[in-house]
Figure (cartoon, rainbow, N blue to C red):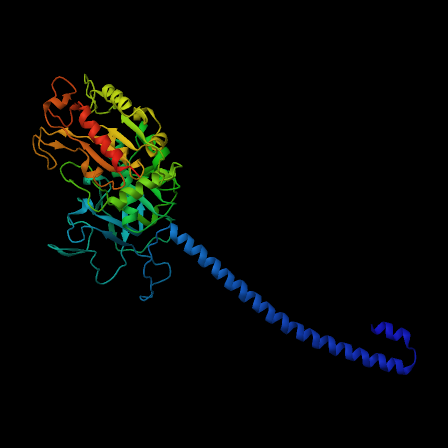
Length: 489
């Protein structure tokens, strides 16, 4: 604009006017720039504040959403002792048996900042060197204890397997956490050893792998990146392949690893764990120690639901029509040489014909469960309203039934007093577990005498483990009718 004015006016007045105008423009531009800067600054602050508030709201929503799906274990963490930076010490906390050091078989613990020393083959617990060690356990008879074992680590502090067969005891060392030659693993790790899982799906599913799920709930922790470390080599059995394909994924996104091979995969002296979950193996079926599982219903139900969901089904699915499944126990790993069967239904064909004839409008199916992949078993059970099954391991898929379904489970005749049952009574083999599957109605087909069972081989004498059941149709009808009546709308 100045150049235009200069071109139009050629005399001194116009030059003065041009110069004056030029100064005015400069001043105006400067003031405008200042005002624009102030306005833009306020606007920017406003926008930033808005974005900040918006982000906070979004983060809060995300946090709330995430929190609904996850369990957290928040703990107090307050600096006070002014330790050196990165000077870690080990810590632990447990649930159960907190006043008797010898009750280690049932204790469940999480160890923090512990390391496996590959040179010594032991887990080390780092206690800061101090003039006066602090107690780690309070035994009602022995007083305050400063070690994890009272007899040079010959007994465990926790057990890595059911029944206390695999003791685990960290060794306390009065040195600081490693600062070199170490690998630090941040995600949750679990160390355990199976006992019955290679040959018995009931024990494997509900006691051994189930105990990992129960332990995480009991300690109020969750980590989908959990690494399950199997202490010894995993057995190459059909059941273990089933666990790998259909069960372990219900616990973690990671595959289960063999402990020794896993440790060798790290090229450091120490392999350190931020959180190591050990112990807590629940005995559910042990005939001497357990008669009931009071208070464990939610643990069983949640584990059941995790498995169903992982295999692609809805744990809350409810069928719209009746379907009866009869178990044909034609195979058992416990079947003796020369046996005709093992804990089965003797007159299975008669039972099938009777049900099809008596209830022609209800679909009925006879299944040999060992011939069907585990995910298909889940699918079939979720569409079942009445399950008729022998006792023993074959009945332990019962928790996969839908809400409100009925299960008719065969009892056995008590010839040897056991688990609180007296001779001559009708004994329920897995009642200690089945009685606590609260979403399924159980009806026990009771056995009243010698004429109601048949030994599986010539020299059998224990009706619990060596006999199969002869079903009476009138009594079976009574139980089926009761189930149908209770499922009426």
